[in-house]
Image 1: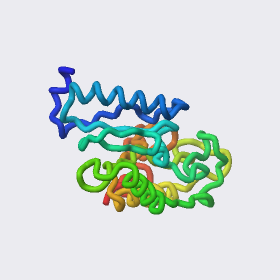
Image 2: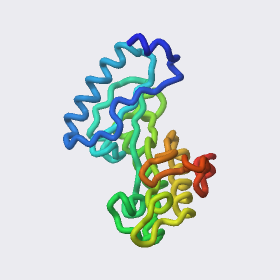
Image 3: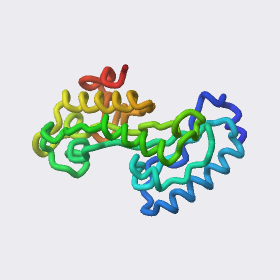
Image 4: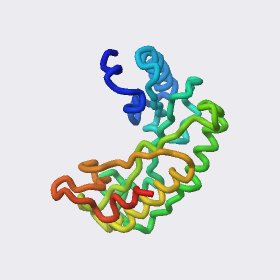
Length: 204
């Protein structure tokens, strides 16, 4: 509790659970609600971030019971279509860019619409503020792929389209990730250099 006072309210965001994989929406909601109450007691001015069960999928927003608090953010993770973003070491066949099918613009509009329907005026303006807490494409460099991996151009373009869709729909975002993140890497920590298309794909 004392440590909270070492940071100004605009210096830190507190995330209750990152990508919860508990297979019970009600249990995750209970954990989020109880943790929120305790955090708010000791950090009345800090921003608190909520995520849903099922690994923080945007479309599960309805499973949460967000408090009427003007200083919270809902964060979802986005990897659609999984057959493209999770090739190689993450379970899907390596079939290159043929399955890109980026629908981020349509999806982000849908998620914002869902948030407005469920939580209008939570921040006194429109709907609960939203964040895309993770997104990216695995497969290919720096990991090998048994087949045709996503191209470096394809990975950067998917990230650019997805980040732009978030920004265009009023969301903040965090890319996953910036080094040694299971093939999603935007930065090579060994050579201390960016992979193709980064960080430009994330700058607007």
